[in-house]
Structure formats: structure tokens, C-alpha cells
Image (cartoon, rainbow, N blue to C red; front, side, top):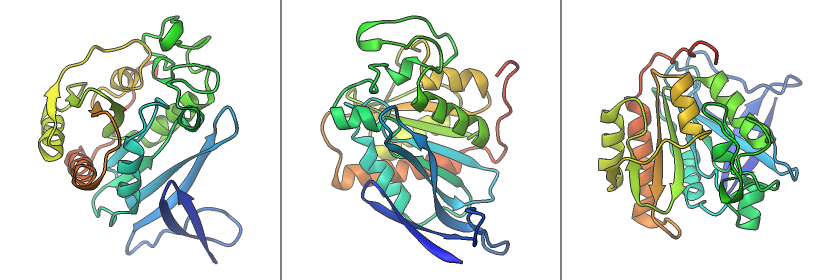
Length: 253
């Protein structure tokens, strides 16, 4: 057996791997742990990672995405803090710091193809151009397909997607109590944003209607210090409040 050390942003995580299988070993008596999962690569070949942390065998699943728009990436630091925090004992938390590393490197909303990944998901997708370029077809982009496959496999009961710069928690879908809890712990206002065509939360809410998927709009600029800690605490509280039953996919999803 060997110890794998890998970096995600500023966070270093460790997973014990079996000899040749490449699968993380999980102790039956104590499944709480942390492992790095390579999900795929961006258009320009940058690796896209997730950190799975907490009770790795729990049926209570949660997902947090730090960045989907490359010019709205303050959530990466929150994701990094979550990835390095003590694992939750009753939640299998998946932390995806950066779904759009090419856009983050270039400081652009879209990916290397100029596609707004948050308009490229299949539910209610329609052809858009300009700033909100939705791509040539639903799921045309590598990065979107990575998130699509991860969500379809994990089926989180709570999903949180960080954006900027509106400084509020969106009442997107699912449990309003969970969204209110997040807002209260994070110190953010609760509000309502339009349901955009082809967005991640719009698709996830349609395909997993018994889950809770919502957007958190961070304020402009970096998030640091107490604000980052509050956001991490709010995410953990929302994840722990999610259902222990993984939501089933709707027909046609």
C-alpha cells in the first residue's frame, strides 16, 4: 500500500490506495476519511478534481462547486477550506473547487470555447450567443459533462453552486428550510433569481426533484477570514440537514 499526496488549490489531501487497483481503501469499522478523485480534464487539458470527504459510505450525499464561471471564482477558497476541514461523520461531501479552470486562468466567464457552462446543461437548453453562449448543443462541453456525470452518479440530496456578485442565497429549489439555514449561518440575505435555461441548478432540480440544489451569490472580490469560515460552516450545516435518502432521477433523466 502507498500514500498518495495530491494538491487541490491550496489544500493538500491524502488517500490510502490499494496496491494496483487505484481505488481508495475504506475501513469497514470507520469509513470517515478523505480522498482525491480526478474527474476529467478541461478543453485545454487542465485537470478537474473533486475531494470526497466525510463518511464515505453514507447515503446522505452533498456537493459543493466553488467555481463554474471563470470570472466568479471566490468560492474556490471556500471549497478549499471545506476540503481541508475535519470530515463530517454523517455526510459524504463532494467538494469540486473549480469546474472551469480554463476560464479561471483566463479570467473569462466561459470556458476555452467561450461557452457559458451554466447555460450548457440539457434541461430547457436553448441556443444563446454572446456573453451567455450556450454552446452548439446541450452538454457540448467537457466540463459540463464532467459535472453531469458526477451528479448522476452521486445523486446528492444537497448541491450548492457558488457564483458572484449579487451577495445573496437564491431560493432555487427543494427545501427552503435548508436554504434559509445556509443564509442564516453565512450571514447572507435570501432572495429569488430567475431560473435560467440550461443552468446547472435548473437541470438538477428537474432531474432530481426531491433534492435541494441552490445558488449562492457571493459578494464581489475575494472571500477571506471570518466570511470564508461562515460560508464553510453554512455549507456543512446545509449538507448535514439534507435527506439521508439519495434522490431518484426523474423519468427521462
